Image (cartoon, rainbow, N blue to C red; front, side, top):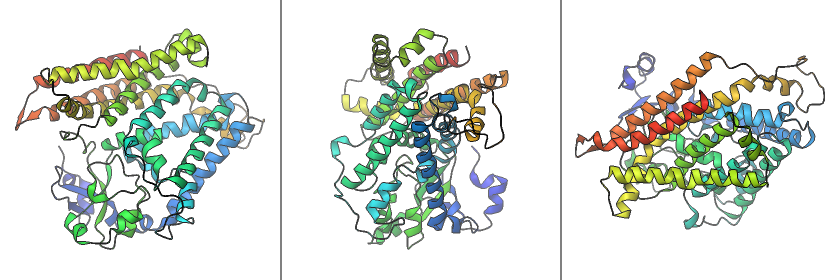
Length: 475
């Protein structure tokens, strides 16, 4: 594996010895600390650039809501449908998450009004937060509610992705829920425990090359005033980070730390993966399996040749839709989880200790993360790329009222899918499978020795899923 200091452009930057630093006790000892770059640091320290971007995204979402309510009822001519479900959703999965982890969370407008209410102003001005500031119930912590939210979106996805009014209703509901929870619970309870996009991006942030980490934990231990914890709108303490799933990259901890002991690092992809889990929590495993089941169902509905399946997904409330919903839930809640538990149980030589089996399931689920991310990217390319030209159309006429702001008279409804796109999809699916296999091999090391045979059940699970997705996407 190439070490960061051996990459030429990083070697040049490393002339400033404070830029590339060791992280004590870490498996990958070197990181490139972007916060120490002289030209970039002022931009990260200043809250106004980030705030301006968030205000722009807030304006875009508000306009999308208005367009969904007042604009054309034809989804392909409505700003809300095309910008939210084609442009934004594509950017999220192709750029924000794989390259920046939870970078979208740093500019997401949904928690913005709640943040302003909690902190009593546009920018953080006081430690005492407005509202009841209750703790989130312990029994509801974890990613279970986020997985449930994603399942709910999947059940109604066919209508949500095509009906502008429904999209506006979903956005209004998300804003209302985020504001309401900010007045009852401390910090960003909605983002941490409920937001489906937060769960999606948080899980796959483990694969991204961006992280916030403490440089020297001893300095933090000696600093009695935990400034970073007090300033974090998520209520996180950076010393406790074991991965990048929870951090929303808001940068408040970097700005507030009086010891300059926090880093915004560039690292190798997937640096959080490959360690055995000591805890037996399965919420992240459940979320990973829901992501796989959902992309499988979406591919069948939106890209498959089965007209009856599309009709069932669109027929909300009908008997066919109830049958579709039952099948969707069975795939996500019974079939895939059951098969994965079975292969891990087989891998662990028929273990009968449920606690140890839970730990093994949580550990082996890491192999599903790279597979899931690259499968979602392949699906996005197959689903959205042929429709990206519609973005120009809605920018030209955002409400479908016959305007020509960009001077464009008409745009084709779809762009023909070339053989190159199909090859890209195949390459992504293959890369996801090989990356998953690499993580599985890391997890097969026991007592300093690699046991390749024991990794086969999980590899077979990943292979079968990849073949199914390749059949749906490429044929």
